[in-house]
Structures are given as C-alpha cells and as structure tokens.
Image (cartoon, rainbow, N blue to C red; front, side, top):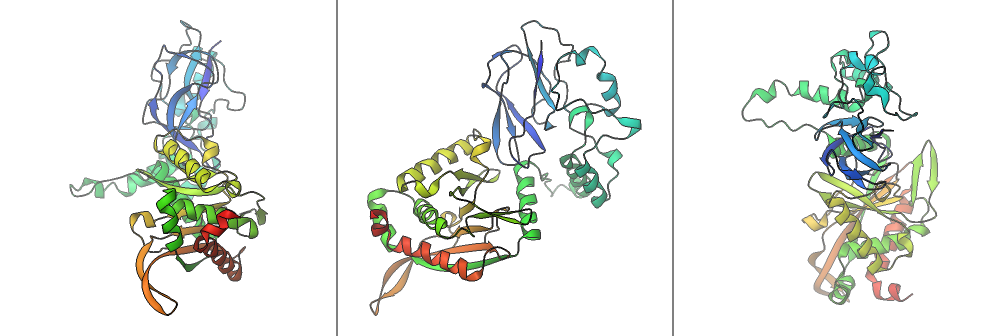
Length: 395
C-alpha cells in the first residue's frame, strides 16, 4: 500500500522547510535511507531520505515551495499503483477543500498517525497557535494569509512572509529597489540573533594574544589559525563549566563534554557545525572534522546532528580581515568566542621593539550565568595555551 513521504523535523527549531531540489523523479525506484530530495531548513540544506522501499509515484511539492513539518511531500508505493493524487499537487492546498479531500480517493493512501489532515473547522482558517500570535502582534488578518502546511495550515513562516510582502509592496514598484524576501536561513539567523539580544544579558571582553609561536608551528603543521584556537578552547572549556554550558528554562546545564560549534560561511549566511568531543581531539583531528563538516554544509549534505547541540561556539571573522568584533551569543549557549585576524604589529620583548603577530580574542557571554572574572580567567587560559603551544601539545 502506498505511503506518504512527509516533511521531517530536521532541526530542533524547524517549523517548515523549502524544497530546493528533487533528487529522484516520478517513476524512480527508491530504497530506505536513500536521498530523495533536498530541503532548505533554518540551519542549512539537508537531504530527506526515503523511509520505505518502492517507486516514487507522485511528487506533491514542487521545487521552491515551503511545507510544514509533517506535510506530505511525495507518495511512495508499488509500480503502477493508482493513488488518485494529481501530479504536482501543491503543499498549499485550498483550505476550503481540506475536509472534502479527507474522504476522497486521494486520501486512500496511508497517513502518519501523528500528522492527520487538518480540517477547516466551522469556517475558521487552520493556523498554528504561534502563527495566530504573530499575526496579532503584526496586526495581520489571518484570513488573508495562505497556508503552506498540510490541509492549508498556516504557520509562522506564512504570516511573516505575508507581512514582508505587504510591507515592501509600495517600495517594490520602484525600478531602483530590489526586493529580497527574508526567508530560509536568513530568516532563521534574524530570529535567533533577535532572540539572543532580547534574552541574554550579553557582555564582551577582549584579550590580545601573541601568536608568534603558533605562526612558527604552522610552518611545519600547515594547520589553520582557526584550528589552533579551536584546540586551545576545547582544552580549556572543561576547566570552566559555567562557560561550557547552556541556559534552558531558568536552569544552567553544565556539559561534561565539549561540543564545539564552529561558524562556517555559506553563500546564504552562516551555519554552525558541531565538533563532538572536541576536548579529546588532536590538532589534526579537529581540523579534519571542521573541514569535513564545512564541506558537507557547503554541498548541502549536512546532517541534523552535525548542526545542533553545541555547548560553545567559535566564530572567526579574522579570515575576512576583521581585527576584532563583538559576536552575538548563539542561545541557548551562554558564551561565544570571536576570533580576529592575526596582525603584524610591533611588540616589546625584553625591552626591545621587535616585529610580532597579535590576535584579539573577543568573548561575548551571558552575565546571568558567567561572571566577569570567570570570563577573563577563561580568556587568559586560552591565551596561555596558544602562546606556549609547543609545551601544551607535549603534555
């Protein structure tokens, strides 16, 4: 019997995903675990895999269309099986036809018990509680919004997209204005950064590091500056449990292992990949894992577990020439380290002015959890490891 391939939850905060590419076409054979399509989420582009063996009978959601979690994306069944679903059915069905479709032949294929069709009850537009709240906040008539979810369900993304379209409606008529919808990864970045600024009592402390020893070591190791900083941070975090922590529901969760998030630049924005057990990895091991995850992210092949669950994040804008900056905490984490470029500057050693290499480390931290003295001691410990990296590695 035919079954539906539905939109899975690919990240903790995901509400909907956008179909960016179908890797299989109608009539193709698929096996469990085989990638069928690529979806853009709040984190990155990720593949959705088949859960059943069979033939891809119908594609229900075309490329460029959003679908809520649990919405049907395609129908998989036996070759030649008639499921009564028109080819190219949209993920944005007419709400008025939602209840009728539940008794039509098109509904004869199996539906997930956890994601039943959503009917339009008593003429009320089907919408999630979050969507209704956001609509009230923005002063939007929910009845004017077209839902992209199952049965025409209106999600938060639909409300915000409607608000964006109407806000720029008059401006978009001018030839000198390019309208770029705030959606996908950019929307998620905007939401997360705004949430961080609304909730965290953030403070930034900066320290300078003499990178001369690391610069000499790199001539032989050929490892990046980011790798050396990531290694030093991962070795230092276990000594500061209040920094290797997350703040959830008024509780401080101190993590026993270091899951180090590293920001990776994509064309569409930033994604934070997570190096598990970073505190036990070697320099070479850390660089290899960062490179592997970064390549997966840039190819749109990243897995959900590779972009979630970080206990601390590292972001390096120095690779683009920044001297120092004030990074925004990636909540629910309580701290983030910003890395500036390694600059050639004059320094004083043994009373003499000599050429040196200096880098600034910028720690933004949530003052509700982390005291200033703890933050400074953490930075000093990272600085010490980098300035004496040879002896630290030998330990």
